[in-house]
Length: 316
Image (cartoon, rainbow, N blue to C red; front, side, top):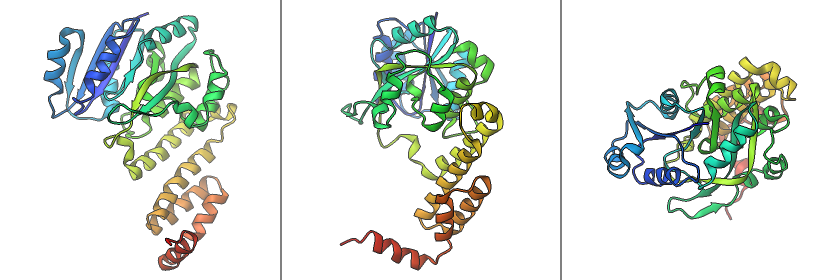
């Protein structure tokens, strides 16, 4: 099997060489490395050409977002397996070898992932196991690199797949489709669920890469992120209601929860009119005690809410 590595990049000249070096240092060489420059204004292109020459295929496009960049790279890829790596992240040296072995042993599987470390902008490890941090490590390690039981149901409850450690079978992408470019946040999660609903998922029980947490990470834009999570939940219900029901997941409750999360954020920043509307929408989808509680609280005058918050969280 051939592996194509897709690296979307936007103004990432500081970290991009580290990502590329980690791919070039693999014990099993990748067959194709494609950097999709999503309209960068820095010197990334000149840097990559100078350091890597024809070892890396460098393609520049007008800025269209990471999903469009990844899709562009996938369409250019020639490999049977597609590996995704963000420009500020890295793989450990045996990542490609472990992943290709897993795909070879399990031809029915469409998606392989692994655990990761988190590092800061200087490369210091801040989280040893992302899975452990999110309470899923024991469950995923117990699968022993075999196809995960009820993968769709487990993944629907918590997204334990990092984009920089997502390896996909090209034939499955041809069947299920690529990233939904109309979604800015959560589009990766939506694709993982589409793939998992039709094919198997394997979680390799070791840390195979590092994910960099720094000020430029895009998921810090809270309101648009929460709005897109509502869209993702609605899309999941639209295309996968029967599959989710079989996996023990109530898609109406999923949508209601996403809307309620948005409503709670509005409530927490004092945008009470928008909070009330969000909680009403959530209750129409599926009544929950949380939405009922905050729907009632959001009807109170802002001054009274401020006093209630002060009494609950005194400053001195």
